[in-house]
Amino acid sequence: MEFSSKLLEKTIDVFASLPGIGRKSALRLALHLLKIDTDSVQEFTTAITNMKTHIRSCQRCHNISDNPVCHICEDARRDKSLICVVENIKDVMAIESTAQYKGLYHILGGIISPIEGVGPSDLTIDSLLQRIQEQEVKEIIMAISPTIEGDTTIFYISKKIKNLPIKVSTLARGISFGGELQYADELTLGRSIVTRIPYKSE
Amino acid sequence: MEFSSKLLEKTIDVFASLPGIGRKSALRLALHLLKIDTDSVQEFTTAITNMKTHIRSCQRCHNISDNPVCHICEDARRDKSLICVVENIKDVMAIESTAQYKGLYHILGGIISPIEGVGPSDLTIDSLLQRIQEQEVKEIIMAISPTIEGDTTIFYISKKIKNLPIKVSTLARGISFGGELQYADELTLGRSIVTRIPYKSE
Image 1 (tube, each protein chain N blue to C red):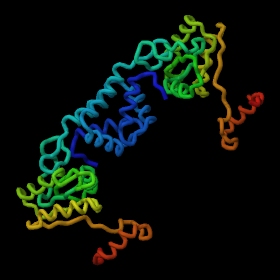
Image 2 (image 1 turned 120 degrees about the vertical axis):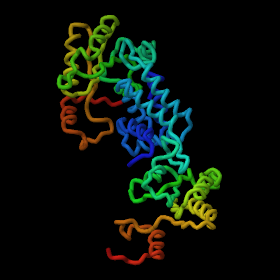
Image 3 (image 1 turned 45 degrees about the vertical axis):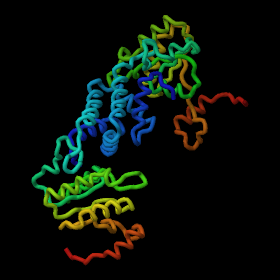
Image 4 (image 1 turned 135 degrees about the vertical axis):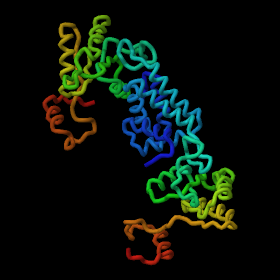
């Protein structure tokens, strides 16, 4: 499709460069912005520019934050002896939305992956070790995907802190709540039999 | 979901205000913009701002254009005696993408709709009548949706030019090419029998 305006075409190009937006959606979005009032369009671009310019990473846990220290790290009601180590900020959001966890986080910014050229020094592992030294940490929860890279990362970190009096745990794995046995994958089902837990009547 | 940054939240809000983008997609887009380099984000916002600031409407046909007169109106190869009247710029794009039409356009900017408070003076009908006076026009093609409002608009315009030596036509309507009879709606099928055309073996 040829457009009568290079300015429109450029806007379609930049929208279409975003993940999950094709050229037809990009056209619809561009025409929408053309139709609405100029103030709303300015609000749109200003929000993005402000976010990109002013957002920062929490100097303690590396979560995204508007301030030097994020609101989770500054929350006095949270258990500071508990650190949940995750790969990225989406994982923090997922865990926070469960409202089940009241400790702190540490965002690695990725996992160790020799194939993609990500080594321990590219992650915030040193900063995690420093936090453990400065702060009285009793337990580290490794909330990292059970892939080869994830396991390598967990192994690397746990080895670094093995001489410290810190408990290391990982997330419980097994059949989903509400999941039917016949639809569970073999690996999960097999391991959930091996790691079976005592029955508790509640 | 609670976010650790008001700046991020604001960006999610503005993305989610766009048509067809929910809050989950908005989050994904915002995190994408956070991840990519600052220059790309600036390119994104600049493209939108430039479009909104500098795009204008062609002073002849009211199509969107980067110049006072759009490239279709300025194209010497186009038949200037033929004007296709459409509701909006999306219709121009749809017709242009067929590559079957070599005349000019006139974008009304809407259709007459008393319910929505749109009268003839809100549309570019006066400008169309002026074009007809100034330019030698032989035929006007009414490429407007066959709704009550569309028919009213066609009726209004055709009445205004009925004393001029101009042919008025509308788009052919009937069964789609490749469409199966059993899936055609009753109105289209019924009217396509009434307005049947002589068979031509090609």
